[in-house]
Length: 179
Image (cartoon, rainbow, N blue to C red):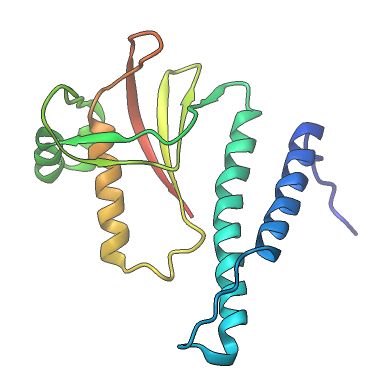
């Protein structure tokens, strides 16, 4: 017996199908340089790299498409670099993550670094922003690298972000690492 499933809204389904076709085309036309290290396997290695890159790009774009059709969410366009300030870093290092949710650091302070998430979406009902980092898999990352990434996400989320359109402050209260 098959279980019923929800059909995707037509614009979403056609957008995903179009993206899949484009990804396949991109893989097919990817340049295939001669690689002396891999010898006879260079074509296979190039194809594998092309598939991996297309898959990563398609994952992020598909998640953005799904978020875009949600009436209560607004996905911010493009890649937005979030500042990391020394105060945010110190507060993060000296507090528990739970206590940080009420803390906002002024973005006017000198920046010591930055973090650019894959996606920032805002819940229109609560004005709470979520930053998302899209990873196809965590197997190729060391635990320390993933921990460092999550630390940067939290530190960037502590800094108040000025909304350039209406001058309001963007409150990033949650961060998610999507895999």
